[in-house]
Image (cartoon, one colour):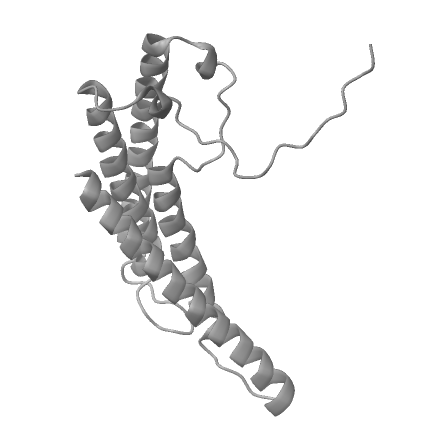
Length: 178
């Protein structure tokens, strides 16, 4: 299952790259056309906004898989293995509930906006709100897989803390002279 999730996230990474490339071309092209030729690409702003929303949700899926979201481990890192497992399980259950709420809300928004079309592209607004559903379902699968690995004892002790340290170098703080 982990290999499938990794492959899925690699595919999402490529989708994010493609969306960013399209956004750069559209926005840059629109700026050049507006200032140089007094015209523009009508669909540029709306499509760029939609792609940005989709990129954000897809990036959040990858960050969830990698444990790259912001967090603090000040308390959890001081607990024993059992405490870390309990906190990880509790945190994942709460995140599953949040994913369920996101799924419900996105589904309702899709239903409400199914017949509504966007002003410029004239496509269903349900596509815009589908990004929340894709995130919610993907997040739930990742969280359930992580919980399964916890329950079956496949997680190492390092993986019991749900965040990663920053890749930045720590700042050297001068110590007071004694």
